[in-house]
Length: 481
Image 1: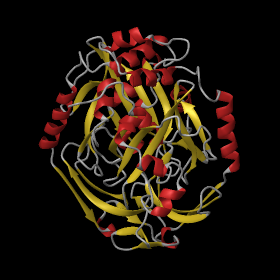
Image 2: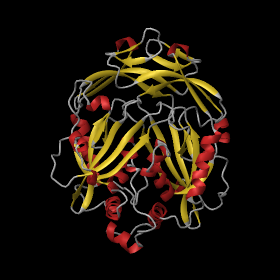
Image 3: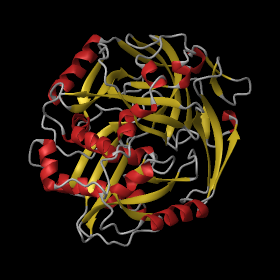
Image 4: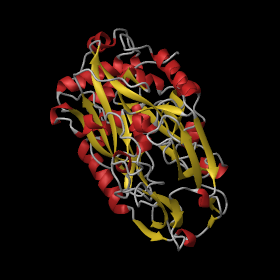
């Protein structure tokens, strides 16, 4: 299982591998372009009364599918003592099913490769993105839509426990989903398996390289690989071993990230202190969520083609008609969430006792399963975060926006989940702070090493999906393709 040293080393070797691979990283980019050229895609916004098999109920309280499956759009009223707004109404996605997000891993040329799918989601900005081997809701894989069974599903349904490398329940976007979770899995196969036309193999290192480009790797891939551990204090690799595994000399920063991922020596806080911080936050913050009919949501307007805030802020619910030639069902319609603007997700990190640490915040979102989850240093997904009030009032926002490019470890645009969100992307940033940044953090923030973060990610509902996405992007190699 994941705590076995050989799995740690095998994952590490894959994360370091960008040569001796099934194909070069540049070839994967070309493969994606070819996949896009071959597929036929047409996505149009439509009125709610044009949605096939979806409708408002008679009281305009919920939008749901005729089958009662998939998901519904409902209204909620939120009361909380977190933040500056104590009460608000909003629509939210209710999708109680637990879906599969799973990778098949196989050794190729002595290195673990991940089976990636080139998958189109209706909300993707650039059509095809790299998704997990299996990405399916329960309604999908039980064929409620009367479509084809998702490829490779049987490998996950029939996997033996000895071949499960990772198995976690992880949350989705807490501001848009009501207590939504997915089963994140990585399984290993040793036998040859059929490689379907819209699938390809890549090492973990190549996936991380591709995350240095905008919108190539989808959210579901990022959340699954965020749970991978590379070891702990009992089994650290020396610098020489790292370079031997990588086949080249690593940059000092890459080695420092590896150390932060695998050791607790030098951590500012011990694990008990972190648990107390989280417990205190969950006890201090209050969250009351009440169902409200969509038509009764305060400050929200329902018209023929949208449910939107009266000031056109935050997001809106829309309807889309979808035709995609490569999907299990080639034509359907559905509601989606369209953002009002691009967001920003950022980690600020710095050296403490010679070890890289992340500044992590305890963040309440209305759809969280257990009140708060640990989030990036800055997470601004709604509202205009560039206005003067936000820049001055959101901790670290000005620091991130004013950081020179020389301090940006990561600066890309990454898509949110394209199956429910329409053309939503957020700027993803990791900033390396200098030692002039004080160790004392604002209330409800705390410093954490990457190894400590990885420990919490192994368990349900500790790190939110935005934080996991950023952590998954930490790469040991630059991509110059």
